[in-house]
Image 1 (tube, helix red, strand yellow):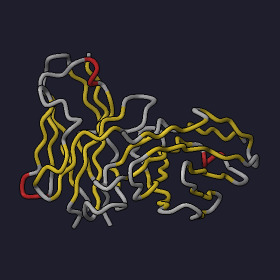
Image 2 (tube, rainbow over the protein chains, first blue to last red):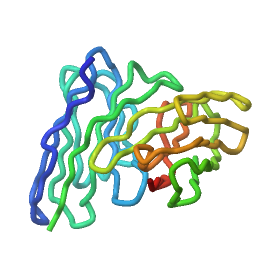
Image 3 (tube, rainbow over the protein chains, first blue to last red):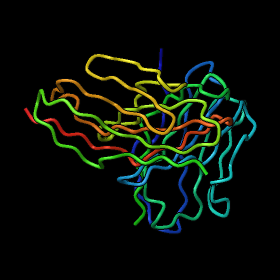
Length: 115
Length: 109
C-alpha cells in the first residue's frame, strides 16, 4: 500500500516570497492533517480536513497560511508571504476517518528554509 | 489545554543496555496515546496506540505501557538501529494529536 506522498521534499526561499506544498494521502483516507515541526520539537497541528471540509484550523496563522483540499483527496498548503520563523518541516498525515483514536500516518515532510 | 512532556530529552545507551522513556500527559478525555519513531529527515512512523490504563503493547525490543498520567516506552537490549527520536502524542475527542518534544535516543555499538 502506498504511503502519504509529499512534494517538494526541500524548498529554500527568501522572506516575503510565496511557497506551496502538496500532499496526496493514503488511498481511501478521508481525513488529512497538516503539521508544522520546528527543529528539535514535536509536530504541531495546523489544520485538519474531513473529506474536503475543514474540521479544525484554530492553530493556522490565517494572515499568511492557507490550505485547501479540493475534491477531498489531494491537499495544498500555501504560505504567503513567508517569514524567517516559518523555517520548519511541514508534515502531511492521513487517517481513515476523524474518529477518536484513529491512527494517523505521516508523509516524509517538506523541509522549508526561509532566508 | 492538552499537554505532553517527554523525558529525558536525549538518551545515550550502549548496545544491550535496557532503559525506559517517559511520556507524561494531561488531556481532557484521552481517546488514545500514540508512540511514533522518527528517523532524521523522515516523517514519524507509527509504533503503538494505547487506549486505557493498564494496557501494554510489544513490538520486537519495544514495549509500551500506559497509566492514567503517563506512558513508558521500554527498550530491551537495544541495537544501534534503534537510534531515533521517539515521539509521544495524545488524542482527544476531535482526533487531534498533541505531541511531546520527543526523546532522542542514541545506541552505541
